Image 1: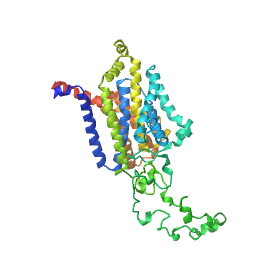
Image 2: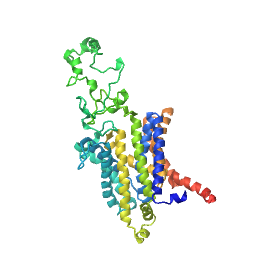
Image 3: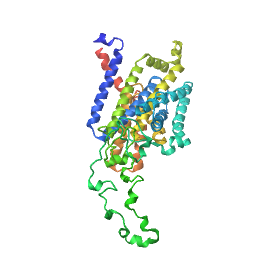
Image 4: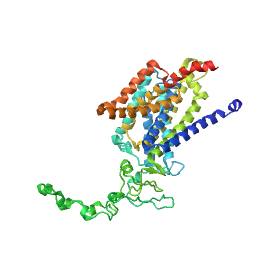
Amino acid sequence: MHKLMMLPGSRLVQHAAIALAIWVALTRLNQSVDPLLSYYLALVGMYATAMFGMTILVGLSGQVSLGNGALMAVGGYAFALTSLNWKTVPILGLPWNAVWSVVFAGIFGILVGLVIGGLAARLKGPYLAGLTLGVAVGVPAIANRFPGLFGGENGLMLTVPYPQGGYDASAVDTGPADTGADAIPTEAPDLPTEQAPIGGESLAPSDLLTVDDLGGAVSSAAPSVAPSDLITPDDLMGATGAPIASMPAEPSALASAGTDLGSTASGGVDAGSVDVSAVGGLILEQWQATLSITMACIMGFVALNLVRSRQGRTWQAVRDDSIAAAVSGINPSRSKVSAFVVSSLFAALAGAVFAQLLTYVGPGAYGLGLSLSLLVGIVLGGRASLLGAIIGAVLLVWLPVVVDRLSADRGWPEPVTNNAPNLLYGLLVVLVVLLAPGGITGTIRQSLAPVLRRRD
């Protein structure tokens, strides 16, 4: 067995097996839990993807970054803009879908990483922290400078994701759905009488608002209320004569209403006959968790191979002693830039996943708090460990849930509930720095070291 593991490519196969086993286990777990836990799994996968890049940048390369949340914003906006505006792949001419948006988000992340990494390679310590802090504050604020392109403070709204294709800005069209050969047929749900669509046969004239129903309120305000101001069946019909119920609503409202999800060949949505609570037979949160878990496992596989490759040893050499590394033939500046590029790629892909989880991209979603949270998570879990990145991702999702439950049980006021997670993050970071500089994984490794030495 040992000889088999020494064969060329055996490590790659081993890492692929680990990633596949984790993906299978998490996918089965996702299918057996309720939608809320599926959403938490999606968040953990998204944070883990971003913090794999932080592990390479902070843990292996030894650089400080307070701006990876802004790099996630680059990926999120690249995903949203390409999804909403591009119908075909440039040069290739292939039909556009969400996979291509993720690819282009990664490309934009690499380009931004090259620029920031080129500047950061010349800086150290507080100057490097100041540069990345400026990136964290400045990049999301660009959306406010160009509201026509990035949506300003309101951001860009995305429709519900589809496995069959990407997003479609024409989802607001109330016309008939595409009936082409590739269209996916959907059936209107059988709603109970009290939930029947407005404008159908179940609506009787007696159900409409009349002057008599207003009673004394009308008599006191007669000059301002006329019969023509009241709602009539004609007011409830769309421009094409279709009931208003067939017009699209917000994804969250549709999800709570329990209508069926469907999509056309062009990616459009007919909200009157579709359900956003299920995608391709999956609950929306389960589909989002599957997407996030798949991305995390793929990027974890890439990160694991990078960490254990020659490039990973190069990053560690520059981190430990840049002068000695330069004497041995390593270019420290090039090594630092490559670490920034890789970290930016991971952050941009995580930002694209985050955009799909929120179905929204805006400055508020990628603020300074997100960058600080990523740094806190990597410090708590362990700076130089991919397992530490996963543990940090779990802590970032789990701590606010614990605080909310404590708040509900003890009746804390809302300001305390909203700020308690940040207080816990700060306290945990102080405790880790003082008592366990290596984070959770580093402490466990130190505790097990004497036992491992005895066995040897």
